Amino acid sequence: MSYLESLRVFVRVVELGSITSGGRDLRLSPAVASNRIKDLENRFGVRLLNRTTRKLTTTEIGRAFYDHARRVIDTLEEAEAMVSTFSSRPQGVIRLTAPLGLGRRLIAPLIPEFCEENPGVEFRLRLSDRNVNIVEDAIDLAFFLGEPTDSALKWRKIADAPRVLVASPDYLKANGTPNIPEDLAGHNCLLLRYPRSPEFFWTLDTNDGPRKMMVSGKFDTDDGDVLTNWALTGQGIANRPQYEVADDIKAGRLVVVLSETPPVSAQFGCLTPHRRLQDPKVRMFADYAVRELKKVF
Image (tube, rainbow, N blue to C red; front, side, top):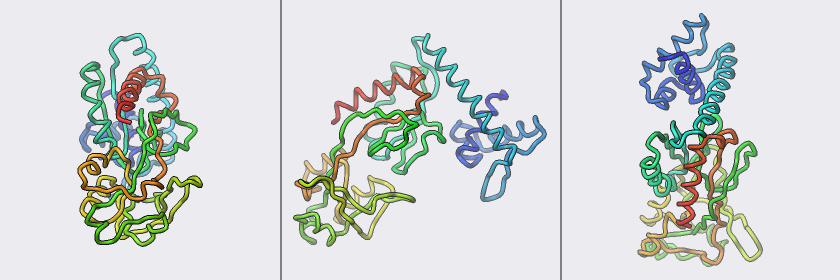
């Protein structure tokens, strides 16, 4: 493996916090990734990482070396992107992230078709309902539901994604149907939560404008599909994107409640670090995905 490839391994190990995760991201075994780090340390005669059974951290020189190595990798990727502008066949890896349900239903199916037309492109798709640090995780394109707040990222809106409050007929029969937003206080609200999650309230769209309703319930999870399954089995009321539960509503498995004061629609779009926009393959996939996804909403 070349010195440059060892740099890539070191950068990803630092960013992901472990040799196993860094190696996996680059499709290397932990042993191979560890050897690449050792090769760098032997080359310079310094320790770059402190390793314990529980934690991996950079040494002082390791942190400084990471900053320079990251710039080298960024410069190389920008150079590769510049060269590829003169090629009719895009090459290389695109790293994507998306929320779990959205990624499974809408993003993952787009990738094979794109690769048929562009066989030189590879994808690394990471799905999570948690917030992802796009810059630190070296993400090229992040599909996103909500309000973007990071000005260092380029936001491209695709559509407004309506949300609905849903529950099963059995749950409503046993617990009653809420008629006004205040009735939610007497119901088991199924919540999407994870460390540092903001969801301890639901924002409803009322005649007087958006209104925050404090909600609570016995169950919470960091997986949106789990919320839908709980709602389907009669556990409570869930706040879900309409496209995710449309089939269940049509089939009568779920019932929309408080339809006159629904949750505020989420913005659906994609986020890109500004420098990634220089990469033609990222632009091509973003254009393709936006075009296809607009058909859904």
